[in-house]
Image (tube, rainbow, N blue to C red; front, side, top):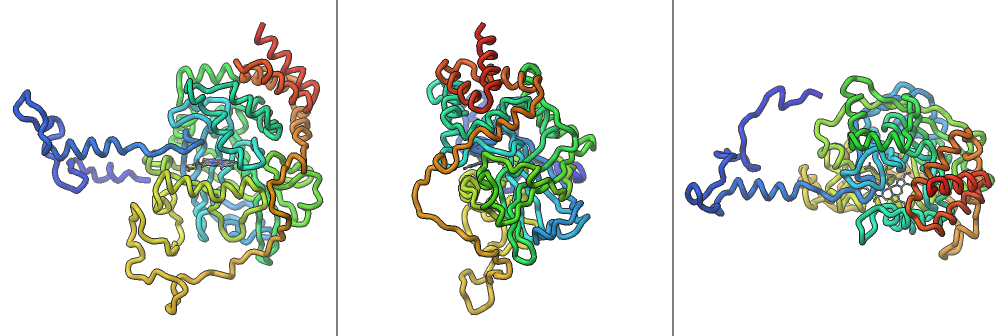
Length: 488
Ligand code: HEM
């Protein structure tokens, strides 16, 4: 995009209300050596704005990079979904992506061992569709009740303000459902070399609804066309020593030189009634659907081709939410997803204000007619004199029943059901993953794990080794040896 300030430079300085600033070098004082005068209006305004520049950082995924791009459909999946974004092969939709680390704060180094956020916003003709995923197909938890604890455990010790290997591994090892994700994070894929060199996953099971109002369960995959590239602990350490912004720099510079990164989008599709038949829980976020059961179906490709003109404006203020869905793409009984449907918009109303949907990067590119009014920071005409209630006798604010989804059968008695009693299979999928690794990759996993266990006490290390042994005796033995070697 052409930079307007370069095209027609405005060089003079005014206050926020347009009055000329007469002197931006010298404060208004009583005499050459005297104190300030309270009537220095520009100084007051300048300092007042300065102390309000920082907004709350995201509670997690605080450090990130973003770019605009284009999604193109390459394969017809209209048999599964009526979402207009997929209505025709060749169709293009504008989008915005933000990639992140998770545990680090806004100023954290990029090349850390951590999962990476992979958030996409598609500006479709039927509203914004967000896929707020990660670079891993599974997650640490099956129940959202533990999500705040997870973030407390991986972030800072309240006393020392240091990251704590003890607290981190104490928490992870007490929740064996985290083991699959922990294995991925400790593997050779645990530190992507750049944001361009990693896959993305919607992770949850979502649903597709087609034109015949039939439901399918769906998982989203985004495969990097740059190839997978990772860093070893030693490489990451050397990079961080020189450059804390290595991911930001890489993405920004690639787009500036016209080397636009690309990802292919695929889906796995499960017919609605298969959910009762598969041997694993299809709505459990700690499990994948084997590709042998549900192969990847190509959908399209996106490329990132434009850096934001202003980082705060577009990246810091971007707001992705799994609740941003469009007709033909919907939710599933995954309880982690359900908690996220509420929690993101809630966080964003706090972080950005109630009218955050009007911030340009978050604004739908199709007409919006939502009947929400007023609120702090309202920027548009606020629907002028249009009447503001429904039902009314004038045809305003009509619901659109044609988009109704087929009913979803739900049953069960309300209780705090313990999923551990329902399905305590924590290890079969990480076992399959471990056995897919080459001996070299397994050794990398052992050594990464031993280093990450750091100064956690022996009983916590042993608990992790026990979990590894339950996964595969060779995994337990490998980590035990690596921990001992490090001690020696
Ligand atoms: C960011 C909550 C699980 C991916 C966030 C934010 C919240 C949140 C409150 C900050 C939102 C903002 O201020 O804009 C939760 C809860 C979860 C959960 C309650 C589980 C119950 C997950 C999972 C994934 C994920 C499973 C991936 C599959 C992300 C990403 C961001 C994020 C990518 C950053 C979005 C951006 O770039 O702005 N999460 N999260 N989260 N979350 Fe989650």
